[in-house]
Amino acid sequence: MSLAEGTMIGRVLSAKPAVSLATALLTRPFLDRVGALFMALSVLAVAAYGLLKPDYNWDMVAYVATALEDRIEEPEALHRETWSLIEQGVSENQEYHLKFSNPYNLNQWENPQDFQSQLSMYRVKVAYVALMRMLEPVTGLVWSSILLSVVPSLLLGGLCLYWLWRADALQGAVFLVPLFLLTDYSRMTSAVVPDMLLAFVSMAALYALWRGRDVLACLLLFASVFVRPDNLILIFALLIASVLFSWRWIYFLATFAAAFLACMLISKLGSHPGWWAHFYFSCIEIQNSMSGFSPDFSPLMMLKGYLRGVVVALQHNDWPALLVVLCGGWALLAKYGHMRDSRVHGLAFALAIGALGKFASFPLPDDRFYFVFIGGLAMVLVASWKPRLEPISAR
Image 1 (tube, one colour):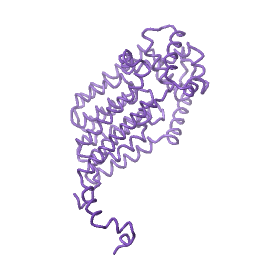
Image 2 (image 1 turned 120 degrees about the vertical axis):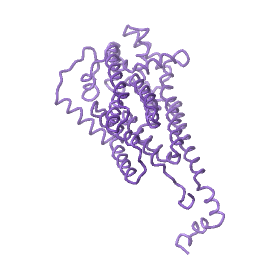
Image 3 (image 1 turned 45 degrees about the vertical axis):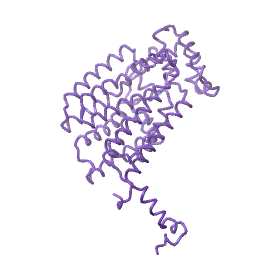
């Protein structure tokens, strides 16, 4: 008799009914269903929380104002209408946070001209703003902004579950969901930002690439820069991978060229202040007004911005550690024969260098800016790994 069997729990587990029950449950079909159910319930729970407890953040105010610019040009009227819409749904605490929680928010509440000057950094998300306006007659602008996080979150979860099923890796959901949560999946769902919509479009493109449908993937990638122009980094990373891994690189070159031109046009038409002014605002010192803001370029200030990004990323965010862990997992999967397809290696390579390139191009430290890369890499690796949790004797 083993030591375990000598205990009460051991005797219960070694009893014939318990053994029969374990044998019936610890089978691949059952565990596949458990994995699928776990992911489905997790996605629904995150979406429900985002719908019931949306995060009324500063970005929501700015995007609502940007959506109103097509009918209101005068700063005071735009400011008044924006806050009128926001105040209809916020709690007292949320309203206080939006208006008075820091000197920047207070200034935006008190100065309509300064408030409107900030919108040049939001107009460039043209597809996101256009979808808000499209949904406005049905939902209103505030709820359209909320739904544009919640609905893509559901679609992303459904797509990843379908991808796991196609890859015969449903049990991998128990590993994929925690990785998604660490990369801000839940917060992106409840916050009003275009990141979840971008994540869904980008993940759909990655799935198309995984299936070898390059033309569809390139169309989705091109569309993604209208959600967030900085997704040009992902396109460039995939262009590099297409050359190194002998894909049909001409498609990716054409996509990158078209997306680059689109980004330049978007920036010009949206009166974007330019890379350095935006870098200075986001990474060095926030500005109450962006009107005429054109700081002289300074290598020392740029270094300060990058150092700040590194410190905050390492101390308060998970994406750097997750990138290291996932790259180690990539190496192990390759070593033990779970990744033999060069296309999968190319996708993993593109996502890894893309995360680094995203930081190098604009060192914002927050996890949500890297979800496309970290979440995409996790999805590719889990689909290749195909973890099996049933006992070896049951296989």
